Amino acid sequence: VKLNGDHLKLAIQKDGRLTEDTRNLLRTVGLQFDAYKQRLFSNCRNFPMDILFVRDDDIPEYVAEGVVDLGIVGRNLMVEAEKNVQELMPLNYGQCTLMVAVPADSGISDVKQLAGCKVATSYPNSTQRFFAERDIPVNVIPISGSVEITPALGVAAAIVDLVSTGSSLKLNDLVAIDTVLESQSIIIANPNSLSNTHKSSIIERLLTRFRGVLSAAEYKYVMMNVPSHELDYVSNLMPGLKSPTVLPTADPEWMAVHTAIREDVFWEAIEELKRRGAQGILVSSIEKMFV
Ligand code: ATP
Ligand code: MG
Image (tube, rainbow, N blue to C red; front, side, top):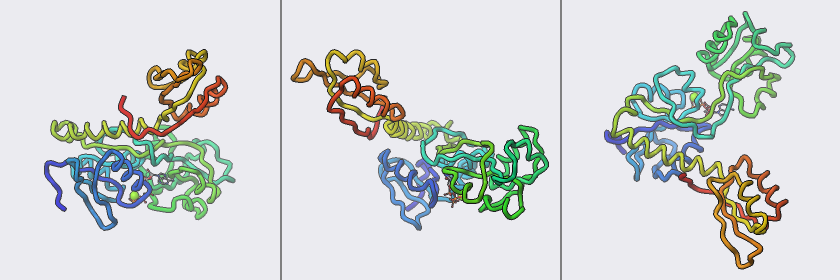
């Protein structure tokens, strides 16, 4: 395997929380590549792109330096790195929040109460900026791992750490009191790659594919039979793409309706449809969607 100079280069996490979802996304948009454990990089067989497998901390740096054109990484790391890279698109997985947390029994409920305190974190730049913007003087203690045990060890009064379910905070008798950053997996680009015509056209092709998969995930495809006299009401109710497709059935009292419904309003819409007499409701997921 060899890196190809004409190919776009994309860095993704080699082995961690984002790895599986990232590989799945790339495969869902039709890219064929090998990815076994020892591999450092891989050529796509059917797209002009090479994939590098690296530690996620290195991705913003590699993108900023032009070692790669693109990277997929948590926004938390992009913001912390303070490098010249551009966020192109959120990818809707790897959701987590960078939060300020304190011991549950500390009596602290507002970050202002942390003035003069030590704050341990693996995100010193983001933490520094958060407190500076609020004019709260704190002493930021950079820690590389297991930040959540530092209050119990007496190292710090508070921490700034990533939270997804909150179970790790609970386990360590900590409570979150403020949010530094909402994060998820994002795709980032080197600004020079974006202004290069050849590269930017390949990047645009890739983004179009990502959009197709991400919008599809937001919608369900619904088919149902609706009493003819309820059709107008049902058509207005359906927050679908455009007006739904309506087809006659063998029975003039009933019409068949096909449409896409947003996942977030899906259950309410189905309940209302049933109240209006809709029957034979079939729901399927949409693999790809281009509007
Ligand atoms: P690497 O070995 O590549 O450096 P890592 O151990 O630094 O990996 P992971 O724990 O795999 O990093 O997390 C990768 C990303 O997953 C984080 O930067 C963050 O964006 C996201 N993430 C989602 N939920 C969480 C969570 N609960 N804790 C930490 N990271 C999370
Ligand atoms: Mg890391």
